[in-house]
Image (cartoon, rainbow, N blue to C red):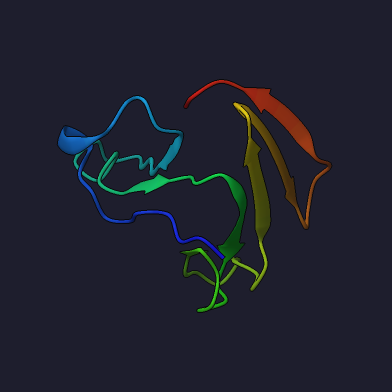
Length: 89
């Protein structure tokens, strides 16, 4: 699978690429991580072989799947129904 770029600070964000950005109650810790999304399928969860690896007691190995193709997003998770979003961020 294709691995998204990880770990760029928000000051270096390429606003033309689709991405996920972390949020935190403390503004000093928000927008510290940027995960760029490539064309195709992105696996998100605690599985170390996933594309975006998250940690935490509530994170499942395959927590969510994000598909990006031709400017369209399709996301699904183990705990909610799928949804479609259109746009670059």
